[in-house]
Length: 156
Image (tube, helix red, strand yellow):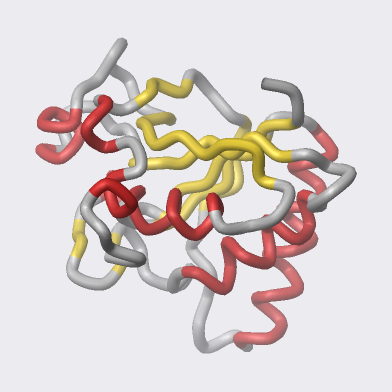
């Protein structure tokens, strides 16, 4: 599949995947695990916190139809970037807020976007989102792919 990659973690990957899939210009979205220390992790180990991985979504997008800046805006609007290792009822480092950059340009854009959103939130609510270089992305088990779609649900 042609396009560029962007990788985001914003809590449970099912809802994040569904949200990005709905965007015009997103060619594919895959749920998986990244930024950990174990080779080829599985869901159970990630959920136990044994691997250090984040539940993440790798987005393949057509930059002629949707910009990385727009993907960042959707990311920020989709979750609470001020809670460390937690989104809603999901608690643990696997649910951390993070942007995994695939290029120096993505890194620069992600940092500028974070700074803008921090200025909007003010000093009393610091953003804890990690912005780091993308590392190996492990595709999650097949039953997690398009999970909400398969179960007739629009969101978590």
